[in-house]
Image 1 (cartoon, rainbow, N blue to C red):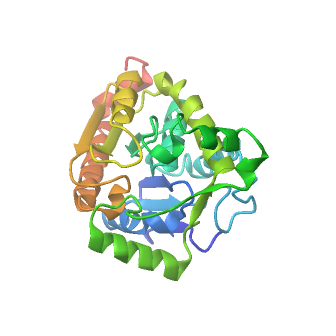
Image 2 (tube, rainbow, N blue to C red):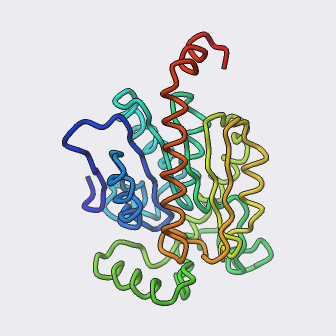
Length: 281
């Protein structure tokens, strides 16, 4: 285990758990507050460092998007069957992983996708940036990086400074994103776009209209492609990309808890369960 990994487990066994996934170049450290809120609501919470990130045996220059998938499958299978309700959630890259699991496992109880990068909106990685395209398609992709600069995807200046200070103290993030890792993210996005129609699990999709990394088309695309009968979307208005650290973080936490509680109540209905067993639903 990495020192950043999260395993918040109640002493008295819980019937409900959430498996979380962090963003590209991040660690589970960025999910600490989110995880604590859910833990206090009675959920066991797990999050592990993804391949290519701090503390993992595979480094950021070697990672392939298939490594992220493999990590997710292993962690999900380790928890599957231990809980009555097993949910998944993630932000950024982590949201894509959560969507992958939702498309792959019908046993999954529900998913919360936060700031899933389906359509990027950043001049540094625009397809029209000729020099960037050259670098990404040559050996230069291993030597060139995108530096993290202000505002670090957080709109609130005070919260941004606090987050940045804590990240530095904990050494909990990679300060730049090598183009080779960005290329793997783009490959993963393409893959996820093609399997969204396989998602039937209950889903909550969250994104800010002011997201400085992806366009709102990302949320709308996911919502339109999934086949979930139970689906909700929330469009935030006062946050950037990293909503878990921004102005509306408490609102996101509350809506996530509310969503999970609705799914738990639905799944505990004996009439619903009998219909599921008879393959009527």
